[in-house]
Amino acid sequence: MAFGINRKELKKWQSNVLNGNIDFLTHYWLDERFPGCTTVTKVGCSDVEKLADWGRKYGLERRWIHRDEQYPHFDLFGDKQREVLKSEQKWDQIQKFSL
Image (cartoon, rainbow, N blue to C red; front, side, top):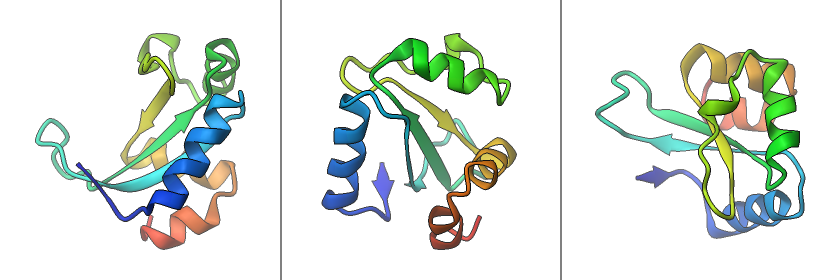
């Protein structure tokens, strides 16, 4: 279940992803499969090749792409989430979610 984002932020991310842009959406998220993780960053792009190429520079494997029909994306947690957000200079998301 997602918390900490509004409809406008979600729609912007969806639009950017559908238009073939790499985009980032961080939100609070609780899932018992990932104890200790309270946020996730979804890095999406409808162009799966572009997304896979982008992910390679962070050591992300193509098989880790969530193959959502409209919004293919990587789910980033923990240290990898912080590393990528810092490298991509997503300071607003880092600050908003105290990462």
